[in-house]
Length: 341
Image (cartoon, rainbow, N blue to C red; front, side):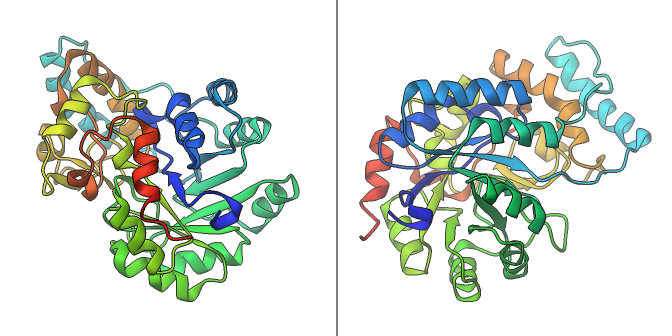
């Protein structure tokens, strides 16, 4: 066991398509620590998936949420974004895009559903849950984990009393988890970030970003990490429920194909470049998460139509190391070979 008395290999909590009870349970059954990315799930769906995880095994698991972020409604910016989406809607035979009735799930309701699900770990990205919330969750028996993209964020999370901090390097796929400074968060690589956080903090550091094989695991441990969180490498496992075009795009990608983009959600995230990321590269977009809600019908229809150019293809820079691993169990075993006990 490593950080928090849990296995050293963690499944990074990937929200969206990859959020799957089967994958979380498979990682746990293989001796890793599975986590559910629940940021886009309704409270009822969180309860359903957590229950399903438990029917598939009795291993501990974690649940991750986005900290609530303030955002400004800008109807002109939203109208302009919808106009940009309209042409792609037409290509797929969809009706013109409309302003979404619901922008995001209610965070407090999500959190109550997570608490009721009784995971071992509740983790947060994109913010500091704060000392009062952390203490309340710990009093109920949960381990609380925050996410930092720079040392200042790690220190702020530690001051709030979290049990561990995920060091999210710039290589990581998906949304940037930072909350201080510039909107994209600090773009510090994992190799530089992990040892700086390990030196600065008293709590365990969990390395994330660009780790996709045993060599990356070994390097993170040498740098001071007490566990590693791996996301992209699990996307091609048998248990990950990706759409066919997403999976095909990952298989065809090279090491230089990821980009940081705000095109789909309004917040910087790393994924494969496609038509949407290229054509909206310099566009002025509404605040996150408004574009995420507005682009959802396009992304869902594109997945069904096999059109990867209109899907958010989140992936990290370790993608070139993650080629057809087979089962999640096989990948956990391969990663474990890098961890020295």
